[in-house]
Length: 309
Image (cartoon, rainbow, N blue to C red; front, top):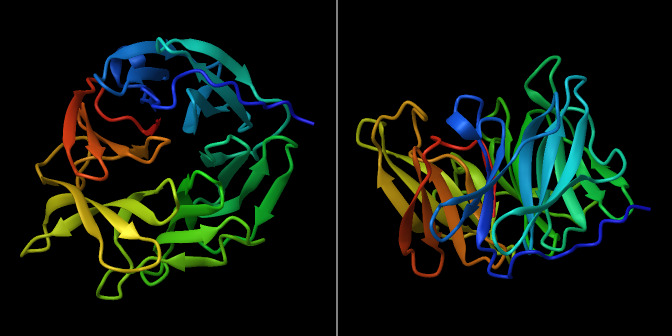
């Protein structure tokens, strides 16, 4: 049995988030930086174990995060990071057992920290997901789901761990898009629902994040202009049961060396389901979901490749 009892560190407001930045991002390279969600200030930096690198990060709420650590032999370990009320790392320890398969590239935790969704890629040949499923963090048991051809990425779990959102990339435009699935289904990847826009077409979107209650998905789209140029990047709130989306936030597109199409990359949600963070070049936008109010926070390292709040 695995002892993964949740110790809560930060307040329920979750005042801190964690980002992972690339090797070319200055002093925070290869690290997990803890940052104040109210000011953007860095409060701590956690380095991975020797001869390893961070892959992904997800939040279980209460100042607790789970990070994947990859080693040269392609093995992947899960680490638990606890952030205290001052924004410092109070704990950074590996979770016991082989919880995740080799080449695990995507993770998403439920708010309680009892369930972890994952997806592992087949790197030889590339271009497909080798395994996806759910792991019970109390027992270490993995429930593997069948996966279609293509790549499953950007997993996101609702707070109760019962509803998932993810992106599927295939060679078929009709099958690629944002999906919502029930975690209770034995094959949740196969028994999913493709989200379509009001014209009946799959959303051409990235970075799906499911709402706290599982009733909506927040996704980033590049809105084409009169000449099919991406004139706007928009963050949409898409009803999971269908219906027209709501524009939460938008920026007019400007050429940027960090991203050739979108004005921001990673998006993450706070555990309470009240706000989102959208990471752009050298800044992060904090967006209040109910009102659409936006606060711009500094982020000097460019864009993180993953983040959790």
